[in-house]
Amino acid sequence: ALNSEAKIKALGDFLKIYGREKILVFTRYNQLVYRISRRFLIPAITHQTPREERKEILEKFKVGEYKAIVTSQVLDEGVDVPDASIGFILSGTGSSREYIQRLGRILRKRRGKQAKLIEIVARETVETRISQRRHR
Image 1 (cartoon, helix red, strand yellow):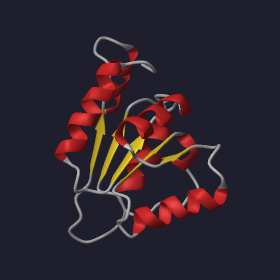
Image 2 (cartoon, helix red, strand yellow; image 1 turned 90 degrees about the vertical axis):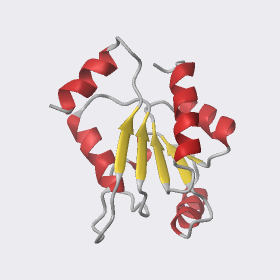
Image 3 (cartoon, helix red, strand yellow; image 1 turned 45 degrees about the vertical axis):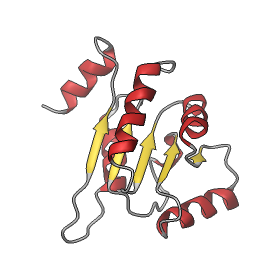
Image 4 (tube, helix red, strand yellow; image 1 turned 30 degrees about the vertical axis):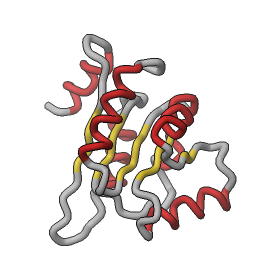
């Protein structure tokens, strides 16, 4: 799944559709974070991102200067992330806890707010089965 060009292309299509929304893109792999960041010019946050830079990216996201952030597992827990209305998952561990954490990043309590979490999975892979199992 790490080198799935089809997933990145699908993400690009979704970014065109939802470009006005505040978007979080999640992936398990730092390499993929940086690839997406370069391809779509989206700020990246990984465990390697210095604390001050991370803080600045999140602040610019909060005020709407950045419309999207791509991140690895570093934002899954324990970090205050500003509201986003759409999340995309390109890869993960498959754990329900991770999925719930990511869902929580976009489902903040606010009246009238609708949020979407979209998983982009490779056909006929273990990802497809994991996604189907989670959505039962």
